Image 1 (cartoon, rainbow, N blue to C red):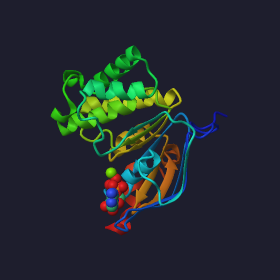
Image 2 (image 1 turned 120 degrees about the vertical axis):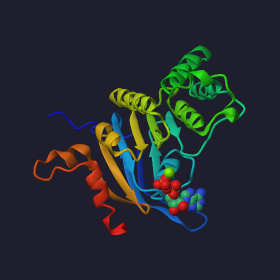
Image 3 (image 1 turned 90 degrees about the vertical axis):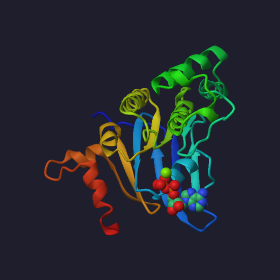
Image 4 (image 1 turned 135 degrees about the vertical axis):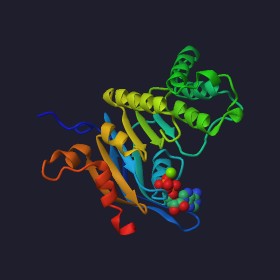
Length: 242
Ligand code: ADP
Ligand code: MG
């Protein structure tokens, strides 16, 4: 029997009982557990304020959890936060080159990888424009370029397709599927449930800082009598909120 995707291999990331309480006393995340294996795309779903960005920022090492532990088996982590974290004095291309260089590429390789990432995201025309002169949507695409411009083993992407045009969304999902098939582990948050259902191997639904459902897409849609879509499953977890 063929093992399910992502199983049977050492985890790239393991979060155990992670919690995050912000200084204003908001408990944004409680008892969060997740393992990400090589070769799988995990979707993170939840309404605004559910704690998705908190998860991605804690797992990316940007925020310290208040409790629990996060263990990573790689430092080649491509992190695309929701907030803008770019080098403002650098051009779009230089932003990606810098990250590729930091992850060990030589000057020539870094340039080639950065150009490839900018092309994929439709940023070619603004390659030599300084970040501070770019629009919000362009900055968001630079953020993605910085995460994918080196051969990351683990990608942590916070709503990367929000604000992308249709071509950009298709290009990014195609890229993520190729990387998954090459053994990369990917955690991606999104409100695009159809795209998640098409590409993810499994998903977590987060509400009020708690995981309220975790399942593989195959488990969800597989049984004939109780076949359900990701959209139906998601909405069913929010019924008491309405
Ligand atoms: P999501 O990404 O799912 O929209 P967030 O992780 O951004 O959710 O936020 C989860 C909760 O934590 C929300 O109630 C939000 O107001 C709160 N929160 C997020 N960032 C901070 C912060 N820096 N300080 C205080 N509260 C925060
Ligand atoms: Mg968010």
